[in-house]
Amino acid sequence: MAAYLKLILLYFGLLISRCLGGDPLVKFQFDYSYKTISPLGVPQQVIVVNDRFPGPPIEVVTNNNVEVDVNNKLDEPLLVNCHEMNACYRNGIQLKDNPWQDGVRATNCPIPPKASFTYRFQVKDQIGSFFYQPSINFQRASGGFGPFFIGNRSVIPLPFPLPDADIVLMIGDWYTRDHKALRADLDAGKDLGMPDGVLINGKGPYQYNTSLVPDGIEYESIQVEPGKTYRFRVHNVGISTSLNFRIQNHNLDLVETEGYYTSQTNYSNFDIHVGQSYTFLVTMDQNASSDYYIVASARFQNESLWQRVTGVAILHYSNSKGKAAGPLPDPPNDFYDKTWSMNQARSVRQNGSASGARPNPQGSFHYGNINVTDTYIFQSLPPTTIHGKHGATLNGISFVNPKTPILLADWKDVKGDYKLDFPSRPLTGHHRLDTSIINGTFKGFAEIVFQNNDTVMQTFHMDGFSFYVVGMDYGVWSEDRRGSYNNWDAIYRCTVQVFPGAWTAVLVYLDNPGTWNIRAGNLDRWYLGQETYIKLVNHEDKSSLFSAPDNVRFCGALASLQKETGGAKSINWNTNLLGILLIVVFVALVDLH
Image (cartoon, rainbow, N blue to C red; front, side, top):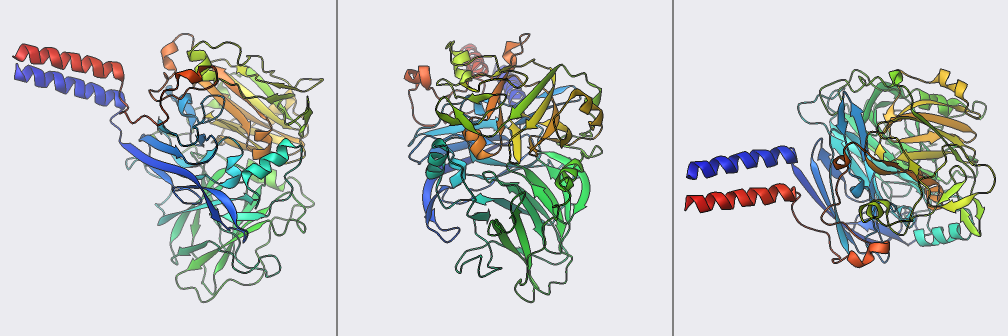
């Protein structure tokens, strides 16, 4: 009988291991709080994670199970969104993400002050460079962000020689006014105005110019060894400013963006737009006669007026003979060629011969051979006043977050908090405030065209999915523009730039059940309502949607169901399976005696 019991325990152990994937669990604890620092020489309150600004990295490996315990020590509600939450569908294998862990307002209840929540998800078949961020209350303008990168499993080779080390650079425009003051300006119908500077890893510019940079500013210094090659993971975590990134006298070999390897191309400088992440290989091949400038400068602005909106760090060789001096390396000169940056974006192609997270070419999914089932044209316009409220719109609708998040409302049958009537084309006539979302076609292959009729460069991001960036051009999109699409090696990513007065087209396979956010990456436009959600239901298999986690938070019409303020600490097992296991073991023990 003892052997019988051992056999039962072995069988269920294997079953549990199979259900959990047998993949390691990696845990992080993040305390969100305030701290007074002076990144631009002016004392201000920023949001720190574990007392760090930017926050500590989340560093994991493909297929790891991840738990992030978030403790909210701020004085207002908090949600944390991870930019890695993107699904894909390759070679007939469906790779899903969990909308319950998405960390955006219309799918999850915020974490109240002095409360906590544990995010649980698996980085299933994913690699690459991303970041996490607070997603509500304009909080990203005060910090709370940090790097998130997923390394290859050891059995999957990199499509380039292993770098000698990784270097993370978080670049972004910055205001000395905190997020509360900035959002008050937006609520009052004001523009944010010109930023006060650009930070690199939370630090101000090196004093390359005494009239533009005051004394006493702490700057970032990157220490390197001559002859070595480093992987630079660069993220634009700013509010609304596109930045040109360059390293004086060094080439940038682009190899990856937002989870997908690119065809390896050398650039002397590169435009990185709000919310985007890129990975470059940089070889230390200079003679180190002095240190070198690392620059992130504002793009598509009045260069003389915006000169102070420049981030400068230092690249320091171990054998450097002196400090960096002289003028900064020149930014792109596209005054007479407005297509320079767009052509650079078009040059980013997928590396179809590289393995991604699994041992197969990641370019083997032939998206160009699939018939489009749905077309959506999302038109963005400058902010305006809508029924007395300052708002930004997609297709004429400024999104109003529901009191009860959509996933909760569906689960508990709360009626009337949202409508499945978001238009697939721009509305004509009056704009409106509404909680209107898309009734998507599950496993449809959608064409989404972002038409930017705003006056500023924009980016758009889609949670739960990556998409193929197949085309972009100036003017108004029309159906005949499909002839210009790249249907062979378009890059696959989750955040794309849309130039003012231009359009960008993407193709996405809607294979991930749930309700997913589509939003402007520019923080001011997002805050003002330039977003919507797409709801995807697998009517043939309702179990394909993740069930609510055991630590789900309740709010809105279901607030009375919230019993605890802390994040659940229970292990992430299938409860029914565990119950069956205990019953069988109990019966076996009875028989044994």
